[in-house]
Image (tube, rainbow, N blue to C red; front, side, top):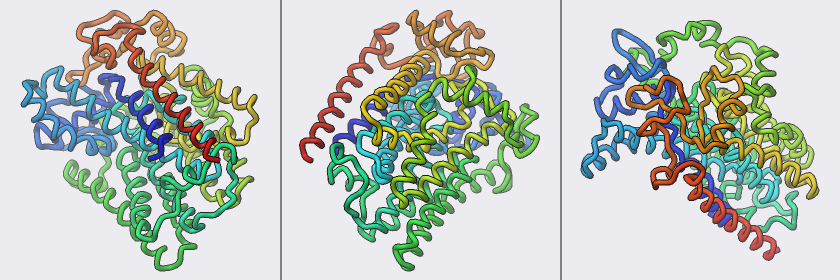
Length: 517
């Protein structure tokens, strides 16, 4: 990695790992599966099912009703951590033990995958013609200046599914660069890039021996995105088609090798999912949502999905309750940026078309879903995988903009980052009954220094009756500053130090690029 990529990863991963958001029905259901595998050596969550309302009931037993991808990804780490915790005198099934293990599970899945995906998004933006500054702006908007930051601190499927789609997309874009070789005269800002920046990472031309690795990245990335959140199957298929389009000019032999790798990667993921469903329900095609308790509307349409409705579209994009643009206003410029990429470089048009369709698909999906509001949520979580694909457009907005426009767009992103910081510090999942989450809960609590308000736990799902700002001891949620003995706003000071260091790191990297030109 170059210094820019390393600094970007450290900045984002630290920002995600700094916060522990505790439990909730959705994450409890997923972590119950982890506990069942590592502690009970079973896929049944019977011993833990009382801590969540998100569960399936089949043949007299309870199961997680969620797609199993994030739980299966976290299981090896938790399996290793349990005996280590015991060796040092901890109890893996105590309140503190479960808190530690669920924190670890979240960090190595949602947090780690999102930070890595942001680096690959940076590479993909470079390959599509953005300057390093534009690519960095897009990656930071995705990682910090959007609802993806809170999601990356939660043991939910959205962040890891989005990250896996980014992995697949970056690999598909890299295949285009393989077909082109290392062309000169790419439409970059000569004052903001160097040859080393263009040719490092996934976007560079690779030897033929890397065909299989890139094909597997497309197949496994799209496949695991689907195992983590079933709706990702559409996006995964589109990205696989893009990869095939980019691989075709490489010649028949290499195309077959790449296509075979894509199919094998996807089939391995599908086999894991089907084996899981067979072990739980006796059929590889029995989706847990079919046996879900409650949520009767899930049985309508296609698991609660019908046709898009304009009223829902308005609410998930513009309104204060769950609107995306009020909390991430820079993304409003993303469609223009995607058009600029396509106009500027016709070779990038297939990638732009796929990115645009994937983003539009998730927005339409959220507008089609009966439970469009997502329950307890900061913003519209069901469309969150659209965010990285929208952010690609921002890379070109930044690349082509004059300084005054960059200041404007940067200010929009900064506002979104501050709001995301407020949410991730106070409560990453504001309760569904609060109609103005920022105005009525998050901002007042943050101003008062009331941080880490979630009272739900992974052990029993209990809390303090919904009185979020009446403090309980020990806190269910926390940040690392609190663990060091700091309170209120002071608990964020260590994170601020990391940000300052990473900002200096990124600035030095930018100066080094310019001096090399």
